[in-house]
Structure formats: structure tokens, C-alpha cells
Length: 421
Image (cartoon, rainbow, N blue to C red; front, side):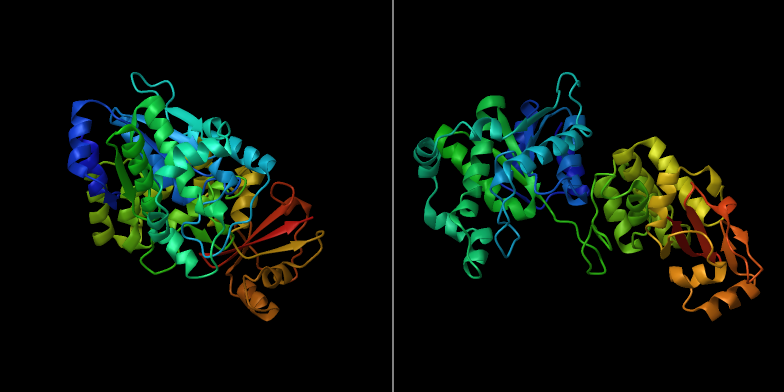
């Protein structure tokens, strides 16, 4: 059961720990209970949450007891970590709605029927909502020296700028109380989270020591970065969300399919359950046959199937191939095709009647109408994978895919689209 620590270290998933040797010894004695928290700051988790979420799953597969905590209470407050300004507080109704949505997402990655170590899913509103202000200040707050709280990076950084309210200042106390409650209720002795949570999590471990005399553990994980210096998990449309309504399975797949060679092996370690031998073989493939992009396809397929299921993976792979003339566009579901075209240059027209060369230009696939006519004349312009040689061609109702889409292509690799209506 302690092998998981070696595996996490190899995958680059350990940033800081209070005492790895003590944690290893505790895990050798018996299965431990481990938790990670997810605050409802949006209607969905994003790709960054995948790291602790999949780590909980790794612990469960190794025989330990995972707890996923959704912050029904802390989501009403807001974590100041990593922020330069005060959060806008959401209403109780919105937070409650987002809690329900996050519950569903967290539940997909944990096994609640596994024996003998079923997962648990909890909300910290269950115990925080019952606390009176007096009880909170007397029983919890008195264990937090203000000088130590002020020294924490998430607080000191804000105090040097715009400052922060008492509401956000109290966040670390509430999160610490979560660890205490889970220690009391379920014997939880390990909390995991991002490296930016080190101060909050160690405060919880210290609270347990002060109140219960217990010795518990903390393990943080590195924040994921990209080799080119751009922010990981950001797309042209914003964050890479786990909700398919916010980031389509096609866009999710394409994001990882386009991973830089310098990042792909690291991401395979972090985000997949591939073995060391499999990943080392893929690393060799990247070095010897980078043009084949075998590692990128494996990464994109594994993550898309893990998050969205096999059927969605098959649909997006079919769409990816069909857009480049390697499959039937007519067989694609309209929703999948629409999601795919949302990721490429496209035009929206109210009705049919526009000439093909004008659509090429309007979509942005070519820089001008003269360039569009030249592409047609040279045999490099396609409509729904069919070569168009007539400069005067006007697409009709029979050309529409899914009743509303046209797929444009210039050459072998430049894809555009048109949405009608």
C-alpha cells in the first residue's frame, strides 16, 4: 500500500509533505483515510482539479479510503490563495446549485461500492452550518495565533496590495476545521491539495494537534505548467472545464491532442493511469517518431474516455478524422459536428444563397475572395470533403450537414465551417 507514494513521486505528483517517512510508516500499518476539497467557485470543476481528483482515485485503487469534500460552506466565503483581489460572493442558491453539480463530477471518479474501501462524498456545510459564531470563535478560532495567520503567503501577499476582508481572512480557519471534523468522524489522517494550499492544509494539521493531540499528514501537488510559458488549461474560450456543456468533448480532446512534445510525457504521468512501462515506451516514441504523435493521441484518448466515456471518445475521434477527409461527415452527430466547427474559423449566415468562394473568405479560412477563387482554380478547396472546381458554386440544402452546417477545407489541413440559421 505504500507503493503509491513511490508512484506519485515518479509521476511528479508530490510537491511538499509534512513527513513522507512517517506517512509511509502509517500506510504500512493499515489503510489510511485521505481527503481533498473542491470549492464551488464555478458551475464546474476545471482541468486543474483533475490532479487531486485522480490522486484520490489512485489512493483508492491502492486500497486506501478516499473522501471527496465539496465546499458548500467554504464556497460561500472564498479562498484568498492565489488571488490579488477580493472574490465576489455568490448567493446561497447559486452556491447550492454548484455544489450539486460538483458532487456529480467528483462522484464519477470515486467508487462508492468498492469493498472494503468505499469512497465518501461530503459537504462541509453539514457541520459548518451548525456552528454558532460564539462556538466558532471559542472552540476553533482560539487555536489560531493571528501573527501566524498573517505570515501565511496567501494573506501577506494580499496585505501588501489591496488587503482582504475578515471573511476571506477566516477561510483558512474554516478549511482547518474541515480536516478536524473529518479526523473526528472518519479517522482521516491525510489531506491532499495543490501546492498553493500548503498554508491552509498545514493549519488544519496543526489544529488537530492542538485540539485532539493527533498526528496527521499533509501532501501537496505541483501546479501544472506548460513548457512554452503559457498557462496550462487555458483555451481561446477560457478554462478547460470538465462539464461537457462548458467545454465540449471535442475541444477537450483537441486540447490534449495538440500537447507540446516537451509536455506530453509529464501529462501522461499526471493525468493517466498508464503504467511506467507504457509511458516509457511512449517517451521513446516521442524521441524517435515525433511526427506520429502517438503519445499525444494516447493522452487525448485516455483523458476523453475517462471524463466523457467511450461513446463520446469514439464520436470525437470520428469527427477529427472526418474533418480531414478520413471519414464520413454525414455520419457525425450534429452536436459533435457543431462542437468541432466551434474550434475552427467559421462564419454564421442567416440562410443559404451565398457563393462557396464568399463563404471561404467570410469564414476566415482564406484572406480574401480573390484567394478563395485562386484556391478553387488550383483544386485546393473542398466543401464537406468534396472538391469544388466551379467558382460560381452556391451550396444548397442538400449540402447541409445536420441540417445546419457546412465544412470547408483548404488544402489538406486548413479547416473552416459555416453555420446556417
